[in-house]
Image 1 (cartoon, rainbow, N blue to C red):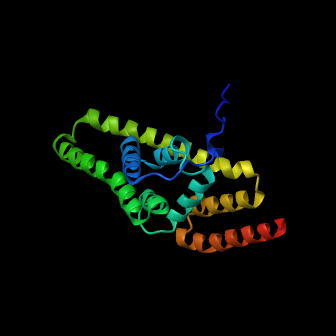
Image 2: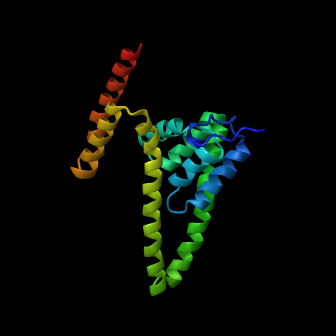
Image 3: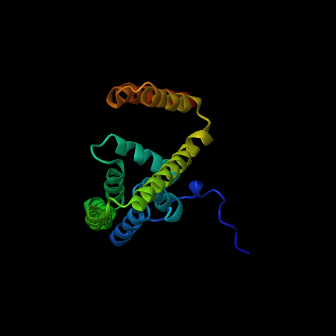
Length: 196
């Protein structure tokens, strides 16, 4: 009798690296499914569906993408593609991520220029906004789970401190990162040294 698959998909080991065509198609599907917010679908596709990365690896890669110039999800496609297939992989994932939305947005912009004053269209767009915010909260919670499962009080304190500094006190992001990154690296270094 075959064993049941593990209940926690985040803990399952990643599968072998994807081919160039798989990268293009996967990122194209993510961009089409996640119109207006691809992070939710990128995490679902990379971690849960294809199992190309563990939840921790995805979080670490996405954290790295915050330090690179440009949109985080575009950075993720380039870093992810390069990690598995080098420069051709980066190009395949980047193209897959951007080509479908660029075509769709071009068509929608032409339609909106013609019909944008219709009241029903405005109300529909307001409803879509609520859905996008809900999806953002859902993926944020999923990305927090690996951190909370580790029950690392130092990581939680650093997370809360960064949130308060940026979200509540409205301090500039570069200044907060300039302080929090060295603190985080130092805390991880000290914790790793204690475990040896």
